Length: 112
Length: 114
Image 1 (cartoon, rainbow over the protein chains, first blue to last red):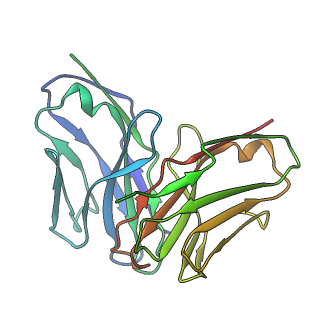
Image 2 (image 1 turned 60 degrees about the vertical axis):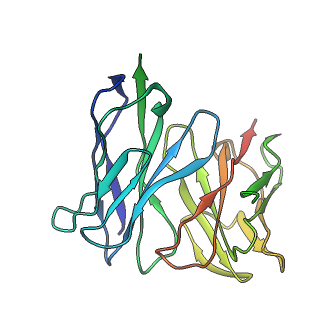
């Protein structure tokens, strides 16, 4: 079945450090891939997405590239800020199912 | 434009009771999905509705049911509540029901079952 495996946290970084959060997936079809972010006390917000292999999603300095050969969609940011502190969820939507499959989430804390 | 709205924001129930959660999608969106997020975990899919028809159902017991109204708003009902139903219930809407559609989430309803 479809699943997402996400890098376990929590992750603590200093401001301006480089961020990578690993995400790999298993899917029967050709999924669309998403990164969502959840700030404390809030719902999920879409951060970026990619719908086919080799696509790169980007938003607010975050990037992720859809790698079909490694079934991965790692999230990166070159210089994190304190305001990036949140929980990040990798998710997929398989062509055969309209619902999202989420990873367990990675909590990021950025310290000044 | 208003985002996805959910009501109530918080709810406390006791075991065995029934609960109804409500969701209004973004204007123009015809698909609504429901997810359960237990503390410390990722959201789990419960239902998807599109044009008032059920399009998908996750691995949840029959105590969970939902419906979508002609104005595309939706209700999630949970009967015979258990302690394990305590969670954040998220509603998401999208224009259509395809896999490439972006789902936009509401703030959630936090349910506590005592």
